[in-house]
Amino acid sequence: MKNTLTRMRTAKISLACSILAATLAIGAPASAFSDLKGHAAEAKINALHQEGILNGVTSDKFAPKSSLTYAQGVQFMVSGLKLAPQQPSGKKASDYFDNVKNTAWYASAFLKAKESGLSLERSVDPNAVMTRVQFAQLLLQALQNKGDFAYTEMYANITDGGKLSPAEMNSLQILINTGLVTLEKNNTFRPNEAVTRAEAAVLVYDAAKFVKEVIMMDENISAPSTTYDAAVTLDKAAAGVNKATVTVSNLPNPGYGLVIERIEFGADKTAVIYFKVTSPKPGSMNPQVISAGTAVTYLPEGYTAVAQATPGSATSAASRVTK
Figure: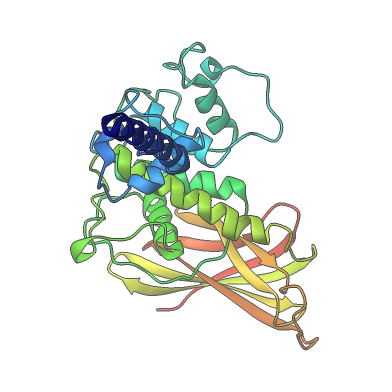
């Protein structure tokens, strides 16, 4: 009889343990990828995977240290930031790209990326490896597609950025000022090294959070359309770099702000700095006096600059250089 009771208790304990294990498994799912255990990016990558934004290279391997291809990178961005053109053209991916087949798993992502304003070249190879600066530049374009955003204008000295194009340097400066990109030891970025799958995933996760917490919060705050008196002052910031200060002198009151949206570099060494005036925060009290607003960006030495409001606002612009 004693042995029978012992066996019954053992069976009950085993059953209870099985139920508890099943409950824990459902309530706290294990890491989606076995090669991410203990990785610094584990939580962010798993979160993106659970949302269906990215997958591993196999069902249980993410390959965090592997180089990212253009196909993977474009898919990460389009899915993570939910890029979609407001007015689809009806075209196919092959209409824009020579090496993207319409039946490829990444074809839809390339089409959405192109029609959302990402500067992907017609000859892009989906299987080619992306560099860190290439990924960063496209990521900034994806962010700008989602809406306007403000950021501090501090110039970061990127010690290994000497061979970057003006557009690449400008993209990195913006991403650094938003906090989405952090320089490494001795202010290095390793721009021309391949971006890893883990690095790209973290950037997409942080960018998606930035869209939700910053861009989407401010998307309805805009200034009334008017004619703005804008001027650009250029001052030497560092070797080969000028600081460009855009000043709009006829804002309705001190609550209005100024945001630089993008820069277009012309072949004639003229940079067009596009800006937007933002409205005061809801509920803020501001004296009704005409005021000025400023915003700062950086240009390669040798460029002149003009300021222009984004489409929909008229602007008078001027440029002057201060040595």
